[in-house]
Image 1 (cartoon, rainbow, N blue to C red):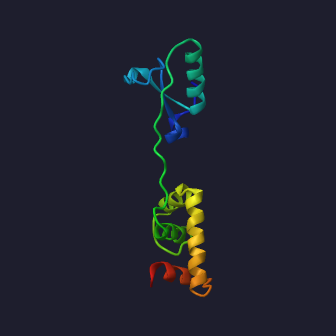
Image 2: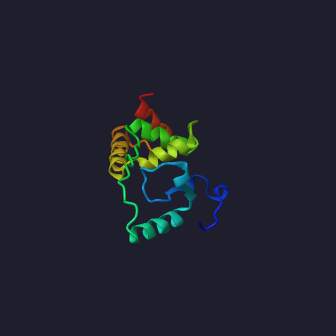
Image 3: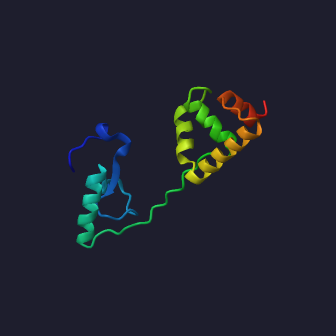
Length: 130
């Protein structure tokens, strides 16, 4: 619609249904467009009584399930541990703020209990028991 090429947007392109009906997935009814064009076309269709809004299911992103997983992700991000950087970043980013706060509280509780160990290597030993 706006002339943006697939090569320029890649994964950020959206599938637009020409008739406005997502259930109608015939390839002749589909068009790759940028988000702006997709939204503009949807507004025009809606204004003329075509198409219908759908409920999209976006499963919640999952973060660290345990303190150990969270600390491991942090260590990967800091270059202290080999691992998948993008996965570690996603783990930290997707861990809810309340859970990150609980993890921080637990880390400091363990540091105080062990005599105030301040070094990261000491923290890792506390968390892993090694």
